Length: 440
Image 1 (cartoon, one colour):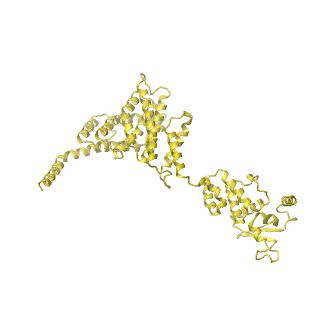
Image 2 (cartoon, helix red, strand yellow):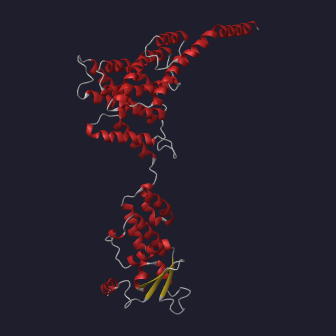
């Protein structure tokens, strides 16, 4: 008997007027009106809405023809979805209808109507489809607007958009920072760059809060990773300095050196966001002499100029941390910073500018003018924080140098002149004030 019933269901086709016993009349406020010849057995078994409308308990069931025609009112934008849902009621929903959804937007429209009409099989099939296929950003926004209103039955669709628990985020961050500061084989460089980009994004506060709030454990992990990066960099410097020929121009060495500089430049961004720049600054200062020697002993090729540019980019970030008090260093180290890097930058800028203006790789070598200006301002800040005698030595060297145009220390010179001129008067006032205080 059951087999006979199933065969009868399958043989029924929507629109077959000879076997239809009920008409579904789809109507819109705009006057659109379409009649679909259906079968009450299909409608009542697969749709709660039609089961209610066609039941004996429906208030208007005794009115003539009310059980032979069911009016369904809908918006014009949902009209086609209603037609599709009624057609889908005639299809056995067993996972074999994946090709019927015609994309995410169409499946969402069908899902909305299925929820309204109470069609559990279609709802399940829609949810399974939406949960499994990729979404474009616009589709994802639409899903977020529609799905939450549909209750628990549609929740699986939102599973991939749910916030991840903090332990999982921390675990991913730690794995990513270890990989991003490693030296993977060349084929994995793109993957490393992607990891670095996403780590920076995780810590960025934009329209949303950072994905990760770094605690002491995370900060320690980051510092350890950067420390290992510096160990590798220092080992490379030692190896390059030990060679008797021009080492940096050798095959592979230039690329390896530039790769380390790129990683260190990225590490500055991460450490700045976490406010833990001190170790990086001190490690860079410790390596400064070696870096300058390695770069200066190499031939002045276009590729070498590009390397100098990368060195200056990292140095600028280190000097900014020192010059504006992010990292507090004693006078001797601040003076050392100026003694090492001011001459290097002074000589490097003309060569970089020359290649950037005339070379074939001008676009890749062009340094942001704001960075040169920022670097110049940082030097002024560091110099003005030194003892006046050290300032005088630096300014004297600057005034006698043929590369006086950059960095322009005019502001430091003006402040030094003013301070020096009024120094005796200022100190005498201070001493006089102290004397009065003592006499009291």
